[in-house]
Every structure is written in structure tokens, then in C-alpha cells.
Image (cartoon, rainbow, N blue to C red; front, side, top):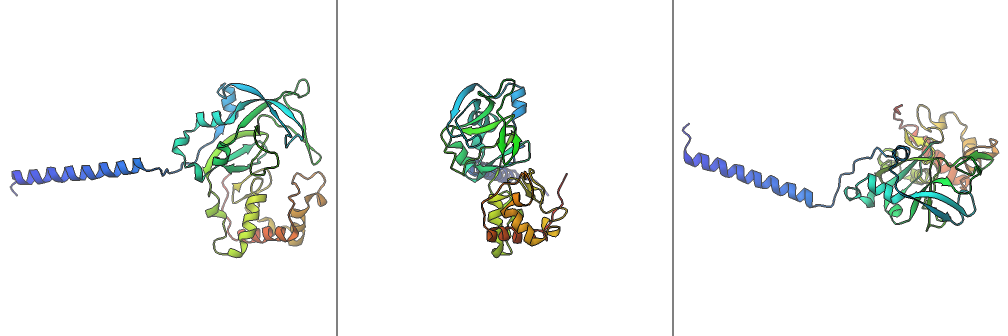
Length: 282
């Protein structure tokens, strides 16, 4: 076929049109506020401390400290400054993101990132009034002795009675994750009657226990390889969740303050999840 000037002109025009369309598409994506959330590997607080990257420290006073149950003074660094320095929050969908605190003992409390950003949080690393030769006064809880080391998250302007805020000690890492992270895997979408148990598990249990590897590791995994409902007598499991101390001396599991009916709702949900096991990666 003979190539004419008309063919060349048409080809050039088509290239220009395609190029223009692609540029417009790229500009449209760049101009939106929607961000694709990429799970963070976490902020390693011990690593930052070793590299002297936590920032300037200060002395803060906490009235009615919820862990020590008295007024305490700590040497601490501004937690917001640490977070903003390590993670570019302009690329995060703040309203749909949660902040998860990872502790040495496996405890993983979480709260909305937006709520956290509207407070004055500090990472305490030394108890000013600790006994000589120690960084921390011992924590006594339910007959168990614990240590707040290496970090304890505290707030200057938050009431210790406001349960929306988390005060984790033994803190070592901070993660930002999608707010609905566990919904897809753990929500009983095909059985609405179990939503009550699911919601109770999310509120009362997931910070310490995991299902299919999702949740805390302070307590045992509850679903894999065997569900707890497969080796506990159901009635006793319900009673144990209500009052753990009636089963074990110096038990680490706290009294949750829930009713027997609520405990049964949790157990029914766990029985449902026992049919939806997913192998947990080691």
C-alpha cells in the first residue's frame, strides 16, 4: 500500500489524541482526594530510639493515670511528631484508617487514627518517680506484676474514663491499617443473627486474641488449627468468659464485665467461625 501524506497526517493526529486522553486521565487521578491505602510495615519505636530519632523529650504530668491509678510524671516524646515524621499522612485516608499499637506481650489495642490525631499523645520512656536503678515503677494487675518498659502511651488532655482512647504499655510498634481490615475476613455476612457476637468479639476480645491470625497475640489463637469451641465444653466456656478468675488463679484474662447472654453470643460466633478456618502463617 502506498503511504501518502494524508496517511501520515492521520496517524500523527491519532497519536496526539491518545496522548491527550492519557494525560487527562492521569490528571484526573492526581486531582482526586481518594488514596489507595498501602498497609504500613509499622513504626519500630525501639529502632528509632537506638538511632536517636524519637525527637526532643520533655517531662509531662498525668493526673489519675489509668494504669497506676494515681498522678504520675514521665519523661516522654511527642507521639504525633514521631508519627508525622515517619509517615506521610497526606497520602493516608485518615477517616478510614485505624492506628494499631503492638506490645511486647502481644496485646494489640486500636483506635481511629482521626481520634488519635486530635489529642496530645506522648510516648513515655521513663517513670520519673521509679525506684532507684529502674526506669519504671512495677504495675500490679490482678495479682500479676508487669513492667511498662519500653514505652507507655499516655495523654495530657484525655480522661482516663474515656474508653475510646488506648493506653498501651510494653509498646514497641505502631501500625496504620484500613479501618475495615478485619471485616471482610471475620464478619458473619451470611448470618445476621451472629452480628451481636461479632461486635462483642471486636470490642472485647480481638485486642488479645486472634481468629485465623487476625487480632492480638497476648492470648491464644481461637480458631486455627482447632477452634476453642472444639475442645472446651460450651457451658464452661461461656462461664469462663464471664468470670475467668473463677477458673484460674492469677489468670491474665481480665473480667470483661459482660453478661452470660453476651458471652453466649460470643461463643455462638466462635462456633460459626470454626467452620471458616484459614491456615495461619507462622
